[in-house]
Image (cartoon, rainbow, N blue to C red; front, top):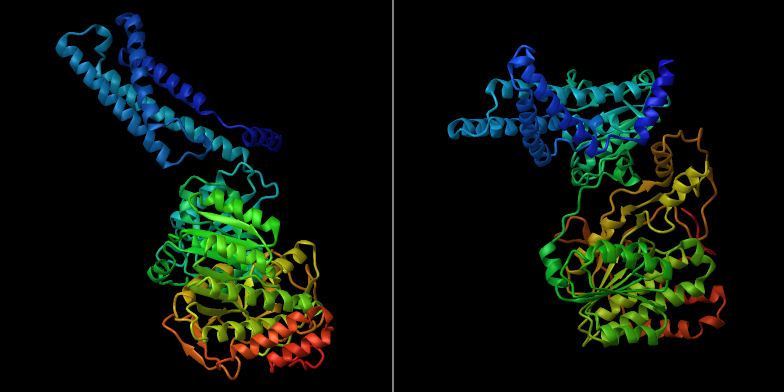
Length: 633
């Protein structure tokens, strides 16, 4: 019977809340009638001893004064079921302010002999002020208790632990308690501060992280673990996630504190932690002044600007006082969405979206002629290894041919700086994609050494970026959502991983470090086993690897290495002033020789077989081992 009543009540609470106008009317009515009661209390309910008409007129006067301060301090605002100390404070301040004003009115009335309606007995004002404060407070407490009674049933609620019992933790706790959908039940806080361990915060026990064992999780039936610490250090966050990841709990994270303070207080703001959080990377420090000096007032061209890297470079460039941003990409739909994003989120940004193919010389020259870019970020390229193994003609035409066209236009139109995005697959390449990137590196490096060339040619080299289009994280996430299996090429395969913002921040930093000719290589931390990536993603989804989600090995694909490298043996590493950026010292290349070989291949591309194209690339990159001769290590 009680559960049935609860069900009906919670249904009402989920769909309805008291509107502000109704709360204002209830508060006003409480003020009015409690004044009349105070009047009768003052005169021991002997109604014949005072003028009833005067009492009513004074009640209306009191109502007007209280209503003004209720509106000023907005003590009627907010959802009653979420009443906090702050709401009580508003009531007290509003009522006290009204009392002071009424005291003053009474004083002036007695001094200047005003009409009786303004001469209110001080004892009645005091009785009324105390009574109305208590009544308004208990009205809110009653609604809150009534709601908690209605929502206290155990239907499909998930037990929750909150990591962090500070301001953010308490905010999350109140959010959970006030959620109309009532899907979580808080079991306590976890905190590393020994001073509060074993005590209670807002009525809930604070535990040490030492209690986080499989037995504790099972006994308490913990299903959700929420990280609620403002500005938690990446390494600490990684440690906390790793301590929970094997228990089968859903691990959620809170958004930035300023988001919460701006009023976006909803349970849906709690998001699952991302694989990037397991990297534990410290924030990258940029020389913002140097970057700003290099970008200020400049027109900047980004090829491949709608792709994962290009679009993030575009977003980050909007932080600086650039003149204009020209975004070139042949993909119409991503370009449209990027344009809408920049227009809506960064309304002051001056940008142009140009749909174009970097291999069409006339179109690209028109862009250079029309916009006269001073800085070029060249991110356009085919990047998927298996696809390029099947299409070496396209890989060479776009990656090499496109880079040749854009770099030559950069010199012709006297671009100040040309920054090319390369890949760790260019080191000792074993696939078509890596070989084309290595050729691009050689071409750009050789261009920087030519006499009379004022353009600074810079190459940036890094590995896999998390979350990029077609990368392993979105693929695994989709496979997990589909129920598996998660497919991995080899149990021992490793890769370097970096987030897209990290990579693009370092691209900007490297772009303004040198004088041209450098190949900058980014520190991507230790290589990560792709198998570990899959296992962690499955566990972050609250599932058990090999049990809930199967893992299937499909074998190495043509041209794929077991591990990637950032430097080859003949490329000594030179440190820079930035701890995450080094220089690969490569031998000087002869531009004429490389250029002739590239032109020869491009001219005969459609007539060549797959084998012939690979042989031509091997002639330019002697260390390139094709899929026909590669022996996997």
